[in-house]
Amino acid sequence: MKTPFINSVAAIIGKDLRAEMRARELVSVMALFALLSILVFSFALELDREAREEAVSGVLWVTLIFASLLGFNRSMAQERDQGNLDALLLAPISRAAIFVGKLLGNFIFTLIVALAILPLMTALYGLALLDGWIIVTTTLGIFGFATIGTLLATMTVQTQAREALLPIAMLPIALPFLLTAVRATKGVLSGAPAAEWQGPLGMLAAITVIYLVLCLLLYEYVLEE
Amino acid sequence: MEEKTKSLPTDLRMEANPPPRLLRVLTVVTILGFAGTLALGLKVAGTDIQQGEIQRIFYIHMPSFFGAFTAFGLTVVGGVIYLARKSERWDRIALAGVEVGLAFSLINLLTGSIWARPIWNTWWTWDPRLTSAAIMCLTYAAYLMLRAGIDDPGKRRAFMSVYGILAFVTVLITLFIIRIVPETIHPVIVGASPQNAQGGFEATSGVVIALVPSLLLWLTLMPITIIWHRVRLEARIEKLHQLKLQALSE
Image 1: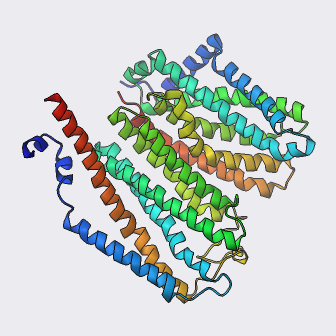
Image 2 (image 1 turned 30 degrees about the vertical axis):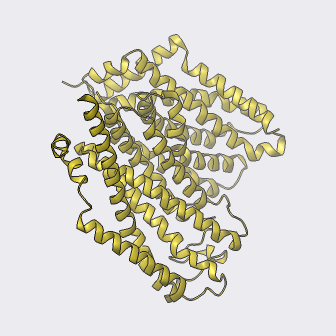
Image 3 (image 1 turned 90 degrees about the vertical axis):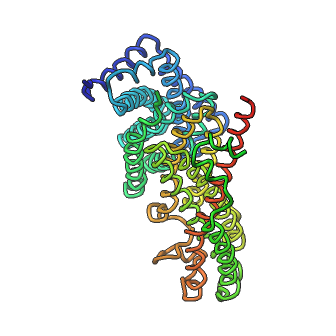
């Protein structure tokens, strides 16, 4: 008797949300990191009004990807350190349900951070980042990061070097997301005609779907008993 | 010695034999074919009117990418079969595919860079196709680093099969990015393209005579022969490890 897919996914997300409500480990660390990263960038790049328009989408996405790396590592390490991963494997649920549950948990936490820094960057840089299309791009991009991040973090957390390996494994695979998301964000931000940034946005969606399918199929193999 | 090797897995015992005749034939044919395609590219094909002799590097540049394509493709095949059957032999093929493919794509980047210096007046530019080719190399370099970082052999094989399959997406992106992001300055040789104003050339009959044999060689014989040798080397390394362990345990 297997627990139905939806129920097991909901249970895993519920568990992650409850743990986060009580410990506030993931979102707070990611948000603080993102804040620091934005400040460091604005000092390091000496972002003035003109440079900002060009650079701000890059700053946004580099910040988001490093923050999400932190979060994914932490989220999987918690599963492993507290023996929860073994419990999940013992439970009568499909591996795909574990993947989707962890993926959605990671996605929600990273999206919260992203939605928090968008208004912050709007205020700090005086650019209209709270645009509907930028939020769509951000949501898609974060979902893409979470897809590969969940799979790869499950792998790297089971290795000796652990935290150190996730960035090496994930950054090159995430670059297609990063490139298309930066292009789309920049296009929307500069007020270019829709035809110019719809291409990258569509490609971002396509890559997300490809990786989602691949990760769903492959996830069972990165969870060895 | 014979007695000791008997306790090894069958595929390791087989790998220890001298190269099979087919591999020896393949090796000779590949070397001759390489010499032949070089001769075609350097002597038979005419000199390009606009670009001069440097255009000849194209007969290595484009085929080497497709060689990498075959090699990385074999990594995907090896990964899928390994995950389905847990056969270590296919994991060795996947690893060999990554190493050979990485070497080929470095040849691809290097020759492209040498060509770009006189034609584009720069060694490197952040063109979409160049960027995606560089990402592809980095992804497979990450494969090798990740592989070295996993100690447990069973986990290593399973995880790297998964990573090898995922990484292939970057190869496809490199292949198709010209169609997706149109503002590349990288020439498109096959098919009509507005980019040909910036350093492109027509695929005339002379170009085709030199290109097609070279492309076929790099697409098939070259990666397959080298990967086969590399797989045998890997099997011998593993055999050595196992014999060492046996000797220590006695």
